[in-house]
Length: 307
Image 1: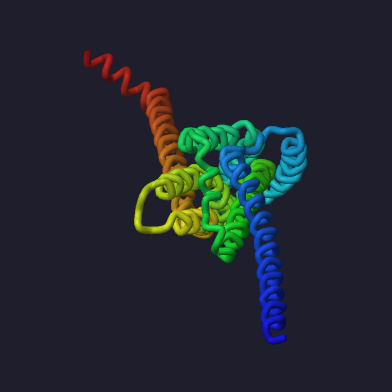
Image 2 (image 1 turned 180 degrees about the vertical axis):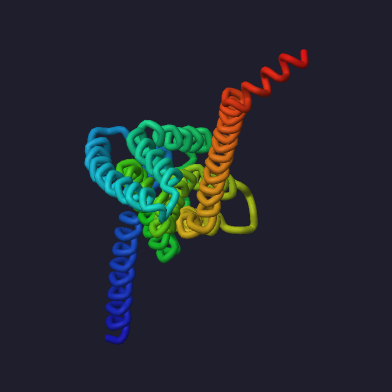
């Protein structure tokens, strides 16, 4: 009888171990298929940029432009009132306002070029081979690593989907953002929105560089296990866009301030040159009026007599 109990206990352990292995195998198979699917999507979404001149974006841009045109008209009227009451010099604000309205009108055509430049740069830096399948060589014995990879890859895909949405939204909202950029109380918010839009153009090229480097490290023979290289690379693919978007206001806001200062200096030079030309014209007109007056005619006759 004891021998029989021992055999029954061994059979129970074997069944439990097989059941456990079956569950782990099913879970690992699900995780592996999900990682393979995300791997196939990753490169495609890196180099896939939205068409900022599609009908939905242009329709929203038209509505926003009409709203911004009404706000600009009200602002121009208020500036005119202040200018006529000699409270402010309204020429410079009106010029900035007209420039913002003009930029907002042609924003879809102009902003298409930086988006296209970012797309071409990403395609040029993307890995040429289909080595992205190497990311599935992560150690599936470490189930926790595989699960972390799934969440990081899924988060990276969602970040780039949000990037495409924000790029189209920035083009559609360009007229309103341009008005905010020339309005001092709202300039800080416009700088932040512009900075995030510019950062969205950079995360694609940077991420394909990280991906190419990760694939190279995973294929190299080093003491570090390949699944750790993959885990670190995927974590950086997820974290780098967040870092860049968070630091966008710090990195690009000074650039917008430099542009504003440059525009101010250019306007100051134009204004001083116009004032100098006007003063010169007034001096010449004053000299001509002096010569054409009675005293001027007497001087001319006197000079003629002396000759």
